[in-house]
Amino acid sequence: MAVMQSPAVASQDGKSNARAAAGEVVAVRGSVVDIAFDEGALPPIHNALEIEWDAATRLVVEVHHHLDTQRVRGVALQETAGLRCGTRAIDTGAPVCVPVGEATLGRMMDVLGDPIDKGAKFDADVPRSPIHAKPLSISEQKTERELFHTGIKVIDLLAPLPRGGKAAMFGGAGVGKTVLIMELIRTTVETYAGISVFAGIGERTREGHELWLELSQSGVLNQTALVFGQMNEPPGARWRVGLTALAIAEHFRDVMHKDVLLLIDNVFRFAQAGGEVSGLLGRMPSRLGYQPTLGSEIADLEERITSGKRAAITSIQAVYVPADDFTDPAVAQTFTHLDSSVVLSREMASQGLYPAVDPLASNSVLLDPLVVGGEHYRIADEVRRLIEHYRELQEIISLLGMDELSAPDRQAVGRARRLIRFLTQPFLVTAQFTGQEGVSVALADTLAGCQAILEGAADETPEEELYMIGALPDTALHAAQRAGKPT
Image (cartoon, helix red, strand yellow):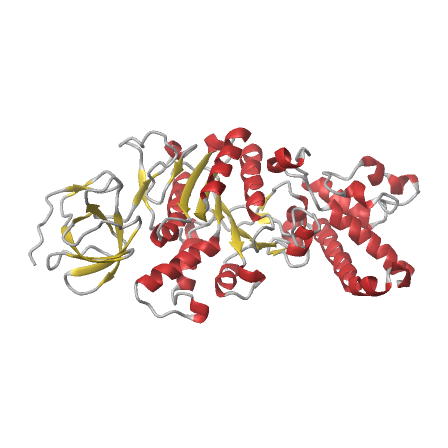
């Protein structure tokens, strides 16, 4: 079959590509499209092919396989319903390129960078970047570890987040992952005056709409770029939307030298979409039905998230844990790339202890005396030990009651319960639902409050007075001083 050579095509970065080739669709199987080109004109892997069809929406196919010297197999990033064999396809000469820079702030986009917020299209002079790029080399990275203060007591104390690193929130459905993400967007914009980029992978339309309204009402939308691959979109769109958000974040870091908070909700749906694409491409499934390329796909995303010499990308990711099984391959692969892991507990959520962060399962590489300081490390260690001792005694308490415990154990249980309640906190983003104003707590106040509880300053304070508060009230903090005890 003779296929015409296209004279010149404007690629997605706005530059003319004189060697762009024109091909022809020869097979369509759902999201998988085979396209034939002239001998020697095959586009490289990851190139974007623009389909010239008569539908109202754009259709872009990303190249994934060279079947032979004339045919490529690609994955469509939009619905292919109505696509016919013989339709012309143009090689753009580059990977998918999306708008980046100031123009993206306050906008909601799809995987191709096209607006989905009913706003105006991006101007032709808006800079664009490819979604596929190499990570920063070691020499370009900043290796010093710095803390990213969130104002959330339990996270700052027990699982401190790294500036320019990766942290994830693990939990099943309904334990508060998205609420934590929304609170952290507000913290970044208000405290750090930074840029936020949100990647909604497999999000429901309702969730995206609620996030948009929340950011608008809180006044931080103009410092946030939103990229969505919705649940009803083809797997190719959900699979690549994280890379689109990452390309936007990298431009702010490398070109504009601004710190960026990259939020991904959620990584499990990214792995799930990759599995769907793998099945469509005919690959044999691996363990538990996942794609054989699961590890490399997650690594391609995670290794680009790092800190440069002048600015950093700090990533906080939600990870759905199917059936609360932390040994699931997608969850286990994500763990290996993280600096901080925040594990959300269904049991704590059922007791109304929000944020439902498990103080024993959550951890961070930054919780080191050389990074956070000896005092912080000591207090965090004592808090963990006390809560662990309380959990060991819970079975005895449930069977025999508190009266059967020794006096030291009863004291330890009381202090542990007060610590657990003190580490709860009302959020700014939930104020409209709870009627309670949200608070952000400085790390020094968190450490002082935990230290006071550990030393017995709050032993006479009712537990309910420590629930959903910010810093420890002065009445409790100074109780030990009035009793002649050190605080």
